[in-house]
Picture 1 (cartoon, helix red, strand yellow):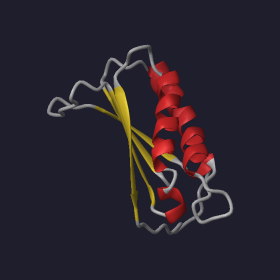
Picture 2 (spheres, rainbow, N blue to C red):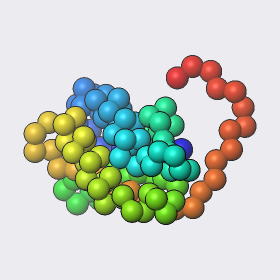
Picture 3 (cartoon, helix red, strand yellow):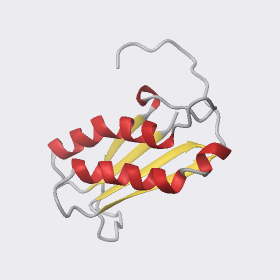
Picture 4 (cartoon, rainbow, N blue to C red):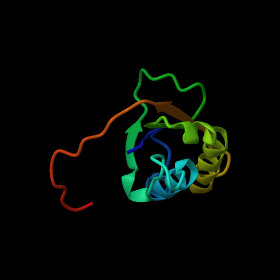
Length: 121
C-alpha cells in the first residue's frame, strides 16, 4: 500500500489540492503497478495525505512536494524512473501553471497487515 505525502504551501488552492487528491491514486497505481506480480496496484490501495508547510520548513523554492513510499520489488525498480516522470506529469496537470514542485519515490522493503474491518472511504 503506497503512501503519497503531499506537502504544500498555504497559497496552493483547495481546488488544486483536491485535483491532486483525486488524481494521484490513479497516477501512482498506473505508474508503479506491474500486473501479474506482487507489485500490482489498484488506485484503491494508494493512501494520500496532505500537509501544509510549516513556518520552520525549508522547501527550496518548491510549492508542492510529493513524496511516495512504496514497497520495493525488483519489477518496480526497473520502472521507477519512468514512474516518477509519469506521476510528475499528472501532478503538473492538477496545479496552476508554473507551480514549482517535485515527486520523489522511495522504494523500500515493507510489510502491511490489515487488523480490522474498514468502513466507508
